[in-house]
Structure formats: C-alpha cells, structure tokens
Amino acid sequence: MRNIVSFCNCGIAALMLGLGAASAQESADVDTMLSELANPETSNWRQLERRIETAWSKSGSASMDLLLQRAQDAMADEEWDTALEHLTALTDHAPDFAEGWHARATVFFHKKLYGPAIDDIGRALALNPNHYNALTGLAVMFEEMGLGPQALEIYRMVQQMHPHRPEIGQALIRLEAAHGGTTL
Image 1 (cartoon, rainbow, N blue to C red):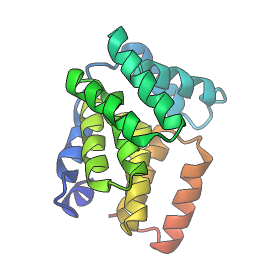
Image 2: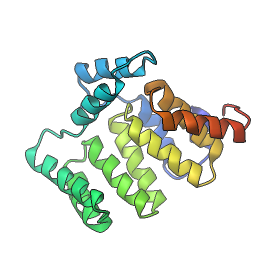
Image 3: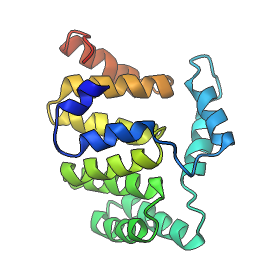
C-alpha cells in the first residue's frame, strides 16, 4: 500500500494512511455484515450491501440526514450545484459523517473536479476505512486520470472487501491485461 501513497502529492498520502484508522460510526453489526460481505460464498450480498449502506447513511441527526436526502434527490436529478450546496452544509455541520464526504466527492466527480473529489474521498476514508464505494470512486478517477496501476491496486482492495460486484471484476480484468497484472 505504501507504493500507492508515494505516487502523488495531492492528498493521497493522508487518504491511504487513513485506511488504518477506526471509524467512530462503525458498529459491531456493520463489522459483522462487512465480514459476511467479504466472503465470496455469501449469497445474500445485495441485502448486506443495502443494510451496510443504510447504516452508513445515518448521521445520528435528523437535520443532517435531511440534508443528505436533499442532496441525494438533487443528485438523482443531476442538479449538481444544488447537491453541492446541501453537501457542503452537511460537511460543515457534521464533519465526522463519512457519507457526507463521500456524497460530496461524488458530486465533485460528476463536475469533473477530481482534486476536490479526491480530497473528500480521503476525508470519507479517514472516517470509514471500509467504505468500498469511496474506494471504488477513487479507483474510477485514477483510471480516468491515466493512473492504471494505482487504480488496479485500489480495485484489488475493493474486491477483498466486496468480491461480488461484477464491475469490480471487470475492471480488474481490464487493468490487469493493460498493466501486466503486476502489483505496485
């Protein structure tokens, strides 16, 4: 993992170091579900995925959850500026809520603002190092930025956490073919 960190000075070092930090919002139930999800033999992975992501979307504050919901509604309508306003308010008022950072990173990604998106993914992962969606987003951006070997390494991490998503397997096949399957 250190090789991923060393390739870029744009906040990635902090992001990858944050992968070892414990998240305050993770409960024993989520940890159990994540363990089940990581098992390639798990057949109810879609249900586990939904339950995990539902748990991650709860901030503990009804008003913060409402901001997230409004942002998600705006995102569904591709109203990126409106979503960004809601998510900036959310991250300002609930800086320890990983899903707020992840959602704002998603908006920045759709606006093609990869620097702020990567910074926000770093914040999300520092708070929730098991956030496989945030890692997937990072891998997608790296691949789009021409950083295939780094994207490959991150996709491998995601596959260990969540081996059921077909798009992750497809990305691994594509990147391993393009980059000789070598690890960093």
